[in-house]
Image (cartoon, rainbow, N blue to C red):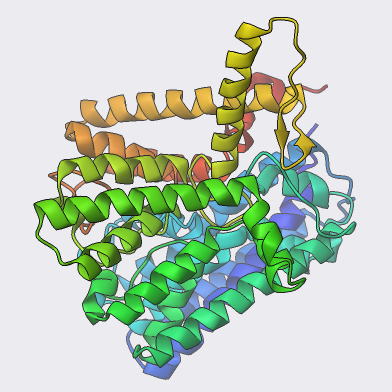
Length: 485
């Protein structure tokens, strides 16, 4: 059965990490001497208290972790992190509704970027920093973060990684998973630092540079200004943002090989990266032509707006430099397609992932060949590696479940009175961890505050399900998960 003591112990350790993150935000609040200092003091102490209680309940736990334990601890870690993450918003009084506070925090930790805040500029610096920090920590995964830091998880690391990692094909850099985790986190950190420096050199102040860099490299999309990157009216900043969003959408294992081992050619030989490049190039070209023809944009403006929005949507970042609600409706279809696909596996982005799209295209191609040659044995190879039949079945099950969830939640949203376009794109946005939505009532530059509370809870659940690749969460709701054997 479930090793509850071990789960208490791990969740307690996770809360100590969250308390440390809250303390960093407290230092920011103290530096700016605004009215959120008390809120962070209370949040930090409460989180430490919660961690101590869970550690006490997990005292004497052994480190033998089953697959069930791994799936449960991963789902619970996001839920509990988000629960304690609401404290700064609630105690400070800047968000009075618990539903709104939980939605905002879950959106942060899952790097979705959807917000219920109509005016973020009235928030103090500490709370703004906390919003950005939740996305940065959620970027590569709370649990993946602990694998790199917490040696007490020995024995269960691979199982936890399998439950949390994004994408169907996983590549190990090093025999020790904790070492691989540290290397990948070092790439993530280097990318973030480079982004901070680039923003600062291009004209952002230091506070904005840190905040935008954290949400850019996490492909999250929270902003410190109501008009996102459009606030700066700087083409240079927009190109920098698009570039780092694009890099953050690449498989981090590939980035490690390209940056650290100087194997840049391997990047351009990779099937998933080539497919990702193709989608970004093709969609950018299409929207650019549409904007020039229908909106009378000049070439540079059309290219900048197109590439920024395509990269923002496909990497599921959600930052914006233009109001896509005013664009021709055909461009909405392209952006919704970006929402659905997402970027590469092993990156900070959400969505279906390009590797799954590559596998599906190869499977369709094989099916046509099978019709012509019924007795042929046709392997499915990705970059020279054969994909076993079990992974193909899992892929089809994943796609089917993904589509069923989208249909059911879209129907539920429409039943709540939300217009059709918004209902569909809100669902895609939550399951894909994208952030913005497309529609007439709630546009891509608007908050989700007008959604009913029930819809917000549905959205929060969808964000979690999407972030943990669907099955990791849904398996907990199956009767077999809780049986003795």
